[in-house]
Image 1 (cartoon, rainbow, N blue to C red):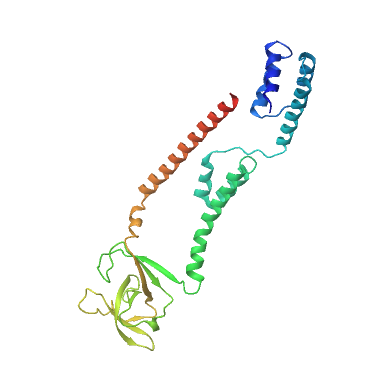
Image 2: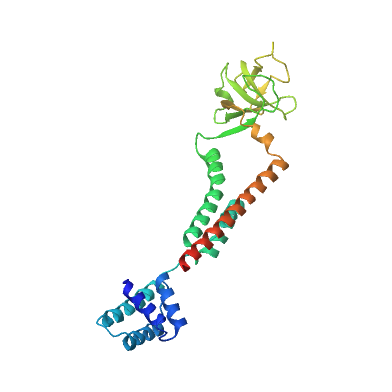
Length: 284
């Protein structure tokens, strides 16, 4: 846009020609790229035609029309306003429900954030479902995991290690030397991980185990292990991951929740400061 149109409006204002406040509003709107109403356009054209006497008048009249046309064209576009980052906390805490609420509330004002919130909530909703399906229904992926809770120092296992068990391998395929995980044959409650030292029988399958630190197998504890007690073969050991469960207490959850909310408040305040600064700059 030519500066000559703004200079012409300023000249009218300095000369006390026309409605000062209306001219000031028109000039401020033009500078900010805001809507110029058709009535304001006609008023400005009339003031320029009647009070500015030079060869630039036709060009100034065309500029007023072009400013109005571009403003009306922009009005046909959707204007999206940046909104508070706190909206991301709805899908964070309520996954797909929070994401859906954020989407429908924000879609008319901040469509990009509305889509991101919904996608975030959908991903958080699908992750556990996908993990469950993969681990339980995909062939060859039937794994389970247990956290070592007592430091028995067996099979190089330490307290808070996580053992991953391959439940795909049937008891009939277990060999001497394999480490298996099974329920205590005496109580059927305690879960143990011992090494196989002998195959007692094939039909039906019965196994004898022994702890690596034990001098001999203990009846009712190490054997007999049948299909009823057998859980699976030890596949992996993930060191110390189970320590996280010790950290997850009511107090730690409260601290984490408070920290997350605090971070959200800080982001919200920063957002409003940026918004206020942007408005002030646009109004200059």
